[in-house]
Image (cartoon, rainbow over all chains, first blue to last red; front, side, top):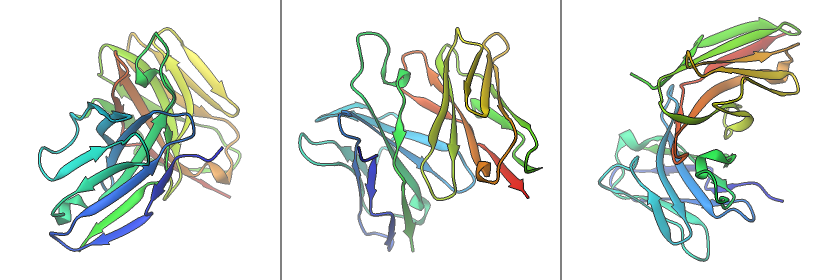
Length: 120
Length: 112
């Protein structure tokens, strides 16, 4: 059973370009989370998605950032018109569908290897 | 101020020794507390998860404790190995479990 997969592992963009980060959750997982980790800092929650739905995007910057998790295919984190401050490691995590009790945070989230974005 | 504070920031120990990492949190109410291990260049891997009603949880040489009254947790590593060198991250989930709040981590280096 393959783990959470992210690609690319490393991405270099020039200021003003677009960055697309992909995340394929573990088999059987329908919940996807995106986190950002700046150098020397802890991971910060960005967005929580289920298939075709954004459940919580309270951690997403209001502009230039968007996320989707279509019915088919991987989840995509899209950053438009990147700036140097967007340089970070972006991690995706997935978890199983939840039971009747407990929210998604009550289940183990399995993390991917991350995508390291460098903006020149 | 971060809602999850970890100490020490970094730690160096000799192989075979024990160590204890600390975590203080202010997230309230909360659902559960987790410890993750993150190797350099990799994603975090879950070590333990405890609900507010649990006091201790073990996973091999890793033992986590939780005091929900004082809002403190610790991770004790027994008989350290070189492969334990990593960042150890304390993570607290809010009451509804929708968000994880991460500490900045403790960087542990085990020397031979």
